[in-house]
Length: 347
Ligand code: 1HN
Image (cartoon, rainbow, N blue to C red; front, side):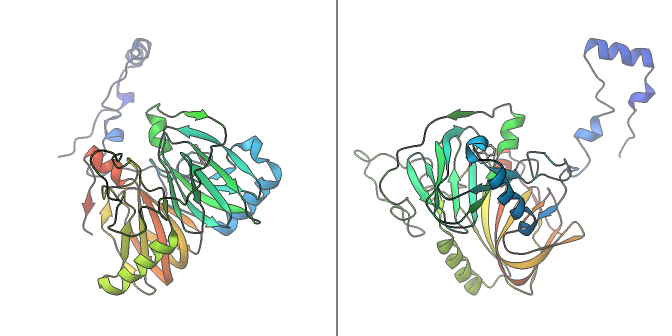
């Protein structure tokens, strides 16, 4: 049975003043805020950031603010439930759109939060992660795990834009967020691991027990869209399900690449309504290709190529693509699994 709890106003004023002076507060008026019944009460509100609306503002930032004065030239996608300026799209996920212009470089640093980037438009840019040069092609997903040096550069002719996703909000509440600055890194003169050691699913480099170093904690940093797209399309043809989904995993362990954030590529065929179970995770969806609409908690949100949209925890989600759509879903299932509360509920 649910019992109505006493309110702060039910206490005499002199007692309330004494509580404040003593630096204490009664729990019972706040109990239901921190522990709502049966499911969380998210602050996060679903939102679509239309690329057509943000792109001109980002290009203007390119004219107004030199990269030297920005370090990272980014427009942050703020959760409307928290207000513009909020450094989060959901409770656990930060996303922003970053612009790098031809010839620019963004200096090296490392930080405690982990990052991943989805390339949105343009070619010729690259990022260097612990000395490995990772070229950026549209749709690629590139990881920068916490503690790894990274700097960006651009050898092409047109602006390059990518979507950054970080677990920054988690590190921020832990008071664990900080960065160390450095200079541009020396680049290893070889293609990245997606082109050398981990070219095909199910194949990892052979290692001897002595002589060879054990598999690194983060063996693969770049997941080329060309390969992900082909794998998704094959799966969609042969799986017989209405949605094809592939998780980005560490090829040495099969587990999520990052400790907190998970990444899942999705193919939504045109004309099919897809209703995933209610999940305890929050999500940010980035549309690589295609068009459609997603109904989140009863509200319909239309989207097209390069748009980004969010959904809070336990959201009721129905996707309906009008053109074959390929998306990357960013979520916090790995963190929730580690905390031991990841949950799915049937609808
Ligand atoms: C960061 O280091 C990058 O390295 C992008 O490109 C966005 C947002 C917050 C904190 C650090 C980058 C970031 C960031």
